[in-house]
Image (cartoon, rainbow, N blue to C red; front, top):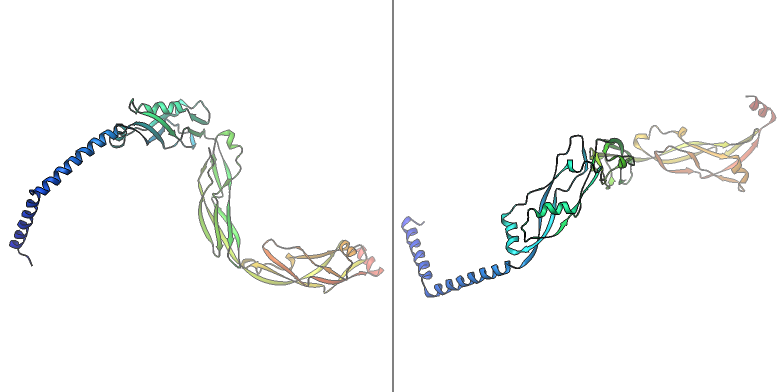
Length: 343
């Protein structure tokens, strides 16, 4: 380990080496060279900065004196981008030493111009140039038009609708979709408020769902319209498919008195997919298979095809087995016919 004497000795040796190098003739020549490089660079920089350039600056924008009963449905931009042209020294002063004050507009000056106010470009340019040097030229302003839209408290409630692609995973289906909130308050000028009947969510995608999922979604923005709240929670519930088979009787439709339908077999099996939550509640009473007398008269075959005339909305992939049956139109005896008429 070094003691204090060693450290002091190495320090003195390093100091002498550095001093000798700085006092040497080569070092002096190098320092003189650097000095002239620095001076020439300064002259070049001053000459260059006297040329004209263009630069872009951001200037804040403010709207003041807005009454409490006024609801801004389309805000004025927070800032504008200004392109100016001047000598480089002036632009450098803007960049390093000068702060632009916010451009301020009073709501009271535009309250008589309706719910949609457009501020003239000339007025915006006048407020900008008041903060610029006389030699500075205003080239462009973006956005070139400042506008705001407001409502004098006019509002109504509209329902929220989903604008999305939602798919369930294999052997699953979407059993329920809930929105919270399912309606929102919309503020807009009178001429625009009357045409609004629904608030759509921003487009989104939910794929291959196998469990209940919740998504916080913003409402789709409309120019001049403000939704409160501006977002909703979309809850998508899924359920697993299960297959079930039940027996359904075949019923004749629109048969004249004294004639009945006989099919062989008289009942068929109906197989379908249903969610687990409805598996136990679905029954044969929820289905109906009927054959009309008119279809039988037009049929030129010994067999008639079957189709399900009624089924619950929550079942799918319905299959009938057998798909066709033998049939017979039977004429009832007079006694049975008269009894059925009396009944």
